[in-house]
Structures are given as structure tokens and as C-alpha cells.
Amino acid sequence: MKETDIEKRVKSKQNKLKKIFKGIEENKKNLVSDLIYQASFMSVKLEDLSQFIMENGIKEEYQNGENQFGYKESVESKSYNTLIKNYTNIIKQLCDMLPDDEKKKAGEDLLKFIASGKK
View 1: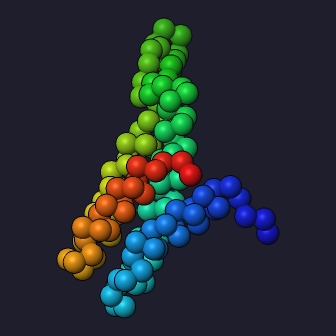
View 2: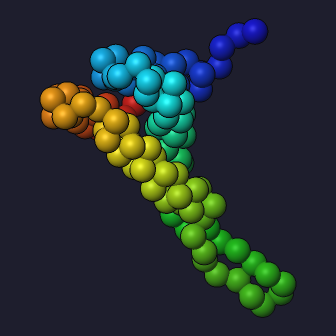
């Protein structure tokens, strides 16, 4: 089965995050691994939604019946807002799992990861 573009992008982000968390305690590795996957997936989806919003804006037209119409927040904008909150929570959880002596360096690496956006 051929790997999709999304799967490749997620794997790339996973690999970057795994490097940051390679020294994590053994008893936290499974939980961290799951969170890394979710953070990577969300990061890719946030990029896609962000691109859509840049191209199309945050509102869309609607029409209910003959005389009721206007603008509302787009589905993509709502999805982005929900996803960014969840993504932020996962990144915080990941940071909280790091040993104190690794938090500063990992925090800097995570900021670079988050800021990197597209590959």
C-alpha cells in the first residue's frame, strides 16, 4: 500500500518529536508515543486548515430559505479553533512529562518544531 502525503508528513513530524523525547523515562514511553502521534497528526491537519483559511477566509455564506442569508464562521475555522486548543494541550502534556533538566532544551526544540510549520 502506498503511503499518502499526509502519512509522510505525519511521520516526518513524529520523527522530529521523537528526537526531542528520546530520553524520556521508560515507564512514560508508551504514553509519550501516543501523544507524539496525535500531536504530529494535529500539526499536519492544522497546516492544512490554516492554508484553507488563508485562501478562503474564516467566514462562509449561508442561505436558509428564500429570505434568510448572510455569513457565518466557516466549518474549517471552527475545526481549526478546536484543533489548536487540543494540540496546545497535548504539547503541554508532553512538556510536563520531561525531566526538569531536559525541559528547557526540549522547550526550545518544541518551539522550533511548532514554528517550523510546513517542512
